[in-house]
Image (cartoon, rainbow, N blue to C red):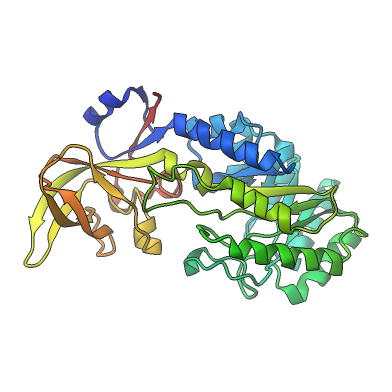
Length: 385
């Protein structure tokens, strides 16, 4: 559970830390821009629930008539609970359990994105037992390098995600021929936090080739899901608060060569919510080493896992100090040497009790929270200006 406050900006400094601070004004602006840019080309966005499933945000997102992209049965249920239409929910994931597949079929979701022949076979078996026809898409690994961190690269040929190019026809033939499956189309997702548009151009060319070579039209396919992964600016989030949705969607429109009747879908998460969130933390101690200064905060990797997991770097600013600049390693209280937010951070002279903001924490922060070291769950402040 979480604590939800609706406060003015002047009030939040008195709150117990750490907490996630969400700016719903920026979220609305981001959603409006993303919807406008996608709508120009008739594209539809499915919000990636794994980025952040806080109801204060997902209720707003669902109000923009977006679909949902889910990777667990619980996400499917939560998306529907927060207002996303079941008929606009897609469900991916390499390890769907039997119960999760049954739940998805019971909920009459749009599509299960199947990631192996074995999963297609199990889905058909479960669908037959339920006397239902399961709508499926085949997730293909297109062999496109995303040029991002190895842990969030998902579209290379040999990967736990999706079907290898050499095995795609076999999977499609099975899905086309099974009386218990309805082949909707193809699904792709090449990675996350992709800041160059070049990989997406390569993806378009691969999609064009595959759609034709795999005879997707003759198979009756009508859906093309191109995933997401559009990156955000972690270094200068204030200047670039909204991702370049125009260039992103325009690139696909310029490079895709597929039938005009296809329903083209995208799965965006980080680019929707990342910049509307900050992690607010209080300095517990400042510690002088021999060659380094440490700012030890009450937030740690349990509240923001990305720096420890991906060696990512978030902008960190002081909310309470305006002294002379010094260099700090900003670290958390967790009993792990990897519990480091950033090294060599320039901050105003910092002391016990000062408050810091770790920016761009709206995605993959709260949704990845741990209770390692038996940590309390952080609070949530929803800011309305």
